[in-house]
Image (cartoon, rainbow, N blue to C red):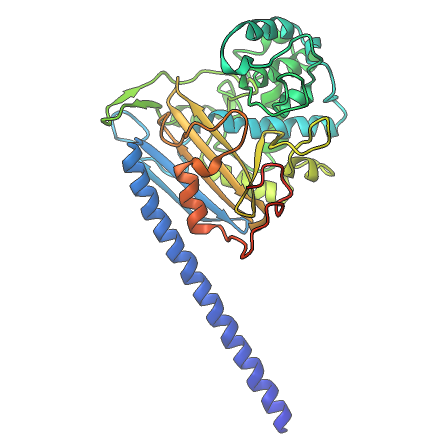
Length: 390
């Protein structure tokens, strides 16, 4: 065998050894990050006095790490696991936005339809307009508010010109669909309505989310309902008060019950395009635009923001009446996501602004961002191409 061949063999073996060493170092680094994050999460739970907490990290379309801490019930007999169902509150909006994209792709809905064509919409709008609650600020019910405006939280006056989170308007979306395709708006409650059925058909089944129910009235998912973690109000001293279990239909603003393992399946299905209607990937994975053409910080159920040069997609959930909080945070360009569910209303919530995304203010999000997200060496304010770059 010639000297050149021997050199090639030596170089090939050396390259394999180097690659193996790098892979081993990377594996150990990821393990160290996961262990450090686990310690962070445990300290966070104790500090926030959360009765039960489930957290999962998805990386490269696999569950890289998950944990369940505490208990799901007031008797402290049912440990929380990654398969414990929680009420995910407003994280449900990500399902609703995606359901509407499917209906648009199927030519069943026109997003520029005037919302007032839905019976009782104008009455609700007039009521909200007359109140002093924050969601009424700048609301003008004489303006032409469309379904698209509602989906993108661009309802407040003038519609299409600004972002303002408005969950009351979002909650009308199930009535919109029930009026068009179901049994009328009076039949939207107390049953597994049309919106819930679309979420089942287009998202839960393709993603194989067997531990998720798209409404509390889905009789086929009663095991999930009975396994639902109890919700609690927790005071500053850690005293817990069990709250009434939600018995809501999927209204638009909330309604989905899920687990961190099932939401990890959802994340993987989004990353692989399994649950995104063909040709609509750009619409889902990028922020909506205002009438002016400028990018907004929200679209189809997702907040968008730039964090130190890294594009983030996320949504939080908060239900003080039932005692739940949630966070689903995606880092799409790094194929990375965090999912966290808690059975206390203050556990994961940080009081995000109604007019701009601020997920970095979330204690749980900050732990995740610090441990797992790779920041660019040079940070450009326009790096993410988002209006909310920071």
